[in-house]
Image (cartoon, rainbow, N blue to C red; front, side):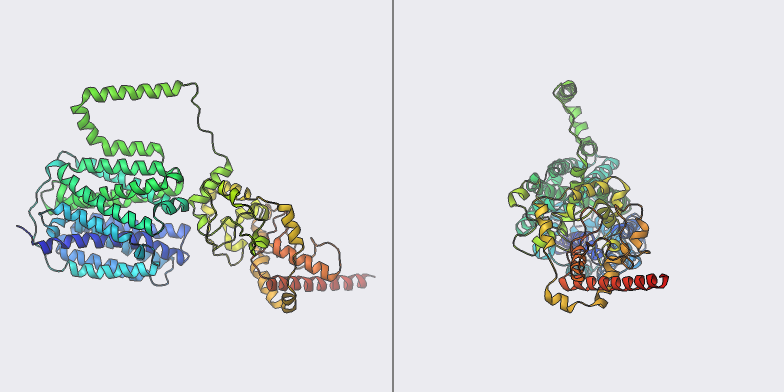
Length: 636
């Protein structure tokens, strides 16, 4: 039975809505919202595990739910769950409620995707069904890359996702007429096991590349940052999805998956060098849209299944294993390795290209044998070539720089002291732009949620850097930086410390001399308040300088020199002089720290705060001296 064009195009809208919800909300807005709420590191892993588990379960059980209701009602239930979860993300969530919300996102997306692709013919019809699948997929990706939506706040993106779910409830209203099942001849010779393995390899590859780009600022800037990049990506996605639909009709599934792999593999190899990010940005979206179109079309149009139950079982396995599990494995690879290993690309290529290579070997046996012999000979010659040398291993500093890039430190820290500004006193000395441009790639940065790090190697000790990475708020009061303690489960943490310790250039001696001339402004000295100084001391100083301070207790054996107990000996590191000179020295130490020790500076505190701390310690010293004199007099 032929479905009317109006009803058939509902499938296009449903595909586009589903993609926008998953890509913009589940993969972007929800994660950004969790970061705003301070749910990071281990807590974030718990929340995302809840989403993945729910997605796998819903994908495998979606077909059973349809047995008790209709496809239209199942889609409505899925859209309702997804919409509620999107609105729920706007609430002030904690770990438990965030995990619960993520669980509902997984349930909604799993039920929505499997139900839709299982009964897709009922919504698109059999007339040009593959073209409609390509159009729906392309429109979904196109909308996700529209700058106004891509760059919107997480809250606005969540609201858009919820509104689209409401639109989805209307689009899938009514019961479509079931379409006749027609197998696709070009896909009948490909076994389901090979299809499942191929999709899993492609999703894994895509997810790893996506994570690496998203968490490597220089790659992100070269691929999807800026209006021009986003519009280009939108057009590539739409064009590639339509090409995929045409290839599925004319050449079959094997050609589409093989083409998608070649594009994604080339993009992953190019991403290993940030200088090739623009080229990778052309290949990556094309490869993603090619296999994504096939992923949507396969259950209903290409699987050769004879009943909705068979289509549903295949769809559930593909979306559970390839979609959810493959995606999680790819993200884990990107997070732990920071790159896509060549060996994995080769293995993935063998999996995806196996059907095409098998048929090619049968049809061109002699040519394939000759090509294999040449390849074996080339490898043998490469191994015995006396000029061949293994790549030199990276130093700890070089590895640490890669960790700095992969963990996105540039998103909050700059490495450029701006000339003729307050930067020079706080973070100096200044270096020339020529020196900055020698970095490969430059890591200047343009955001400062945290301090500038251009000279951090001479402003902070290695111990302090390690302690701060493990527990920022404990070592540096009021710090909003998340913990990176997980990096010390292997050598990444120590490598990052080595890299940060290497960051110092310019005339450091002259800059230290400049620090010795600094003093709080007269206005700050007049407004100094010991009570405010006590508050600042508790926030920034007590953790190391109190006898029972948390950092002092935890790291007692690691200090270069034990911090002074400032309640009893505030002038340990102060030279002799009159009271005013000693107070100024305390202020300078509080502001800039003590070179050669673990004592950090507090460059971000203003003059009045520094003067208040100095006054507090001067008063404590006076009281200590008074008690000492009294006790000495009693003994005499």
